[in-house]
Length: 109
Image (cartoon, rainbow, N blue to C red):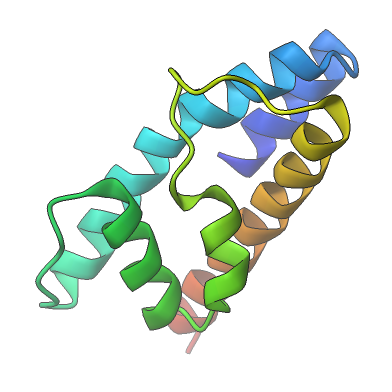
């Protein structure tokens, strides 16, 4: 997911609208992926996406304030200003990288 997001940014340039759409469209995919991870660990998951993202972050050692910046975003939300979009996308990419490192670390012998 992180690589796809980065590739999308390169393909579409620094257009904040494209960044916003990419971010909000990928959140449901992230939620499904994290739901599978939590269920595989035997952890009951909340029914709502923000709750699921917050629980997964907690289980993966990601600070709550970091995930809070993206947990409640939805496609139907009005996009914030360009600088906020860039900051949210940067945080999202950092969170994706942290998730990858955590999961990969669990898989190493």
